[in-house]
Length: 100
Image (cartoon, rainbow, N blue to C red; front, side, top):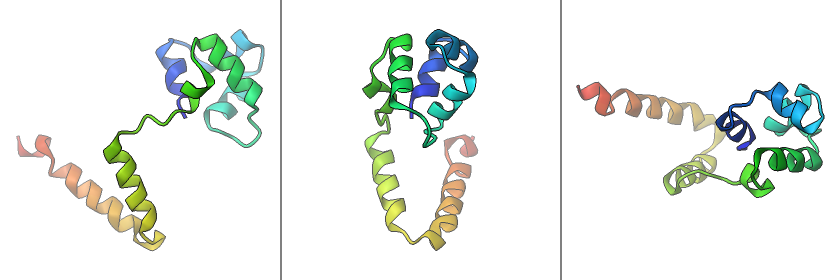
């Protein structure tokens, strides 16, 4: 979900965007978290106010590597997810910054 990222890039807080489209800040918060009660009309109004398309709000901006990692993660049984996260933490800790 890109709504919060786009809003922040425009230098707006939730209250300001809410005022622009005539809703409460809680409506923006629900939209940004993809709450089930969020309405498509809210996304349309946000897109118009932010100068983007609804597609921009919902587009997946992950890299090919991130997408492959996510697909692999989803294939692993859930009881192994913590082990994978531990491996990532280990890789991060031994990354280029750790070598310096």
